[in-house]
Image 1: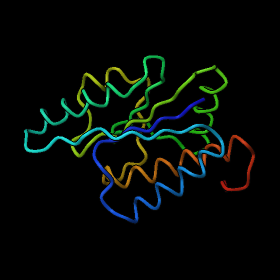
Image 2 (image 1 turned 45 degrees about the horizontal axis):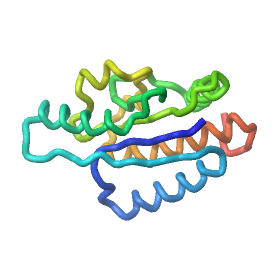
Image 3 (image 1 turned 30 degrees about the horizontal axis):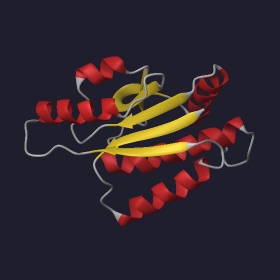
Length: 154
C-alpha cells in the first residue's frame, strides 16, 4: 500500500526538516511514500484560508485513496491501534492511504466530510509543523509493529 502525506506550507525549521528526512527514509524501507505540500494561504480570514488550503489539498488526493485527516477533534488511537488500522487497510487491498495535516486553522468542513477517518495524535496541541514529524514517527512505528520488530515497547 502506497502512503502519501499532505500538508500545508513549507517546513520552516531545519530541525523539523531533519526529522522528516529521517523518518521518510525509515518508512520507505517498508512502503512507497510520497510527501506533497499545498501552498499556504495568507492574509485572509480564517475560514477563507481553510477553504482555499483544502481546495489545494483536495487536488492532491487520488480518487481511490483512503483519506485520513489529522485533527485535534479526531479519534485518539494507541500506536498498536494505528498499526492495526493501517494493516487492515493494507490487507483489504487499499491501494493508497493519504494522511493530511491541515494548516494553522485546520480543515474546511467540506474536506472533513470527504475524509474516511479523522485522527488526533493527542489531546495536547502541537504546531501543524511539528505534527509532520510526529505523524511520520508514528507511521514508522506502525510498520515496525506490523513486522514484529523491536522498535515499539508496550
